[in-house]
Image 1 (cartoon, rainbow, N blue to C red):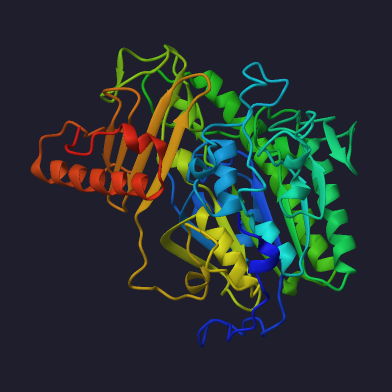
Image 2 (cartoon, one colour; image 1 turned 180 degrees about the vertical axis):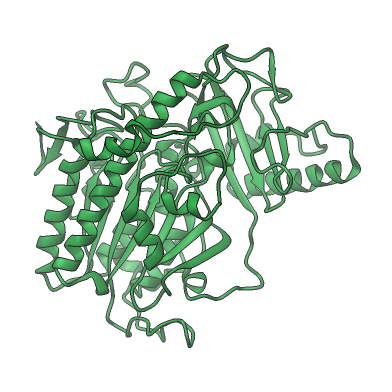
Length: 508
């Protein structure tokens, strides 16, 4: 175990952006940090992304405050999660490491979930992990978490050590498990679980604002992690003003054979209305920073745990996708890929792996910056250490990279744009998927289900509609072999238990 208390020390190195990128923070003047993590938000569910033409076949979400944040900061076009489902994605975001390194592979079930097994509980062990909240807390930040954690259930006897306050947070109010209702939710506050009245999105924002108000009066910089419950389903009810933009609007849907258009039309409207509820409350949060006169001293990071599909590739949901077609599944194969079950489509599509990502850093990041290089949730931990001027201990294992050079407008020639991802689906269906992606190609191996491997040429097929895993073209075979070797090397580097079961002497 790494002891942050003994290994992390406040550093005062020469620090700041290159000439012309902005004044930057002075040494020793550390910014406040607000990290907003939405739940299940698609990369296309943001008006700015659609307006820029980064996605097709999607409706324009009514998100004026996300769009404002994008105008005032830096937007990442190619930002990924490591696993396209809640708990493992959040492990990576908080620790800067792959969730498989902590034996978290699928979403963590709560005691009231039908799949919960009291003899096989899963959690992020605070004695075997370090979160960025812990690192900043030990360096003098006042830390708070409002909303969703979903990295272990601490309400059962003997599980008290799994509480968020054991992972680096001075204060917590929010969900005790992975989900709750969109209104009148049970939430833990001051160590007690009680029923609240109102829309969950609004209630959690009330608490986030209260934390900001208290923290602004203190002498220490603060870290607020605001993890929303929305736009995770169930999506309704929402506030009337959040429903209004979609009530009578023409909402385009992806083109896919046999798509259940009526169902997807209803789901799309409800999903976007829930997203607009998040946006409206983001506006409240940004206004609070202005009212407290701390906006110029505060970094705001906006992202989501993973992406989402709404009829794209014939599914809705995320990595544990659900068929959105009238027949489930459409025939015996799908784009050359055998189906695991008649309802679920385990997947690692880009729309499941990509997430929105915006960073506003007044005086340091030029407004309207667009970053095209590949980045991921793994990169947040080292980036936050740099922003907070905290020296990274040599013993602290992090898989990501410091993003500040990109934020300052640099274009490092040695920036690696390849990306590796993982998903072992245990709940509802079984799949052992590993993915290696370059800007041009993408290989997905399912080591559990023979015949479910996939290969896409993203340059000519960004929608991932044509699986070319069996394409005999020499350039395709060569690309598959190269990505296969890199995929196996990634598995070996991470000591992935699955690697021991894989034949490495040939390309399947």
